Length: 361
Image (cartoon, rainbow, N blue to C red):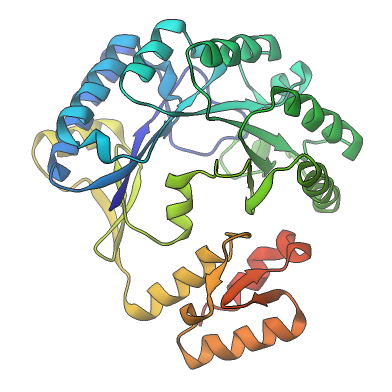
């Protein structure tokens, strides 16, 4: 079975920290783009899909009519009863009862809402165009419409944010008692306003915030199943977890990535060119990398170590080099072995990249 990711590149306004490809929403451009997505999806009509994730950008910025048209085409193209999880990303300011009703009608069973902070001053600092009250209204509408599986995104480690400040943000967010949390440290990426304005972050404070988060969420009963993700029992994100299991997924849309038949690809980051390629039945992927056995084994280890509760099978360490590195990591206690499973030691999560890079041989 294969996952399906669909990229909606439109936003009302780009956040100050964001370096993802996006364009300001325009209804006519979005109409044409939806038509291209529909045509692109037909290329994979016979694929067996077990999860769909519609992300962005801001998918909820689309009009009700555009959302309905896209979802109807997907229903016509794929076997919805076989889909185990169907996620749709929302931003609070573009949520409406009508849109939520359409999502429910077409079988979306999981929402991912970009909150980022419970403090209006922090939302303004991040360049978000919603306030906390708007989020509360959107969340209440979603619950009223019958959505039980809701994920909330938060960002920590903002400039001048103390550990105590973050603890208050997290505790306030936990009052919603939602099923899933995705928590990310603020990163100053190139080609963003934050980078151009000389923004900085403090690794030491972000690490303290992370450790505080682990402690608070563990006491609240959340499972820390992936480095940046916590969930209540059996509410882990199925679609995203399959990324870390190194399984196949289709990437539809401008700038989307995919992984099929050992080919990892990325679509062109230009809406006009993307639509032109699709219209003329041309390949819109500008990057194609064949993943041979050696690279596949390495990627399986690096991705799988992110799954803190699930881990990897000891049999995934196939080559002599990987086995030697594994023994070194076990001796250093950066990795631990529980029966036939290899897992990242929780006290070393914040230096995951350094540990994972050792397996690139």
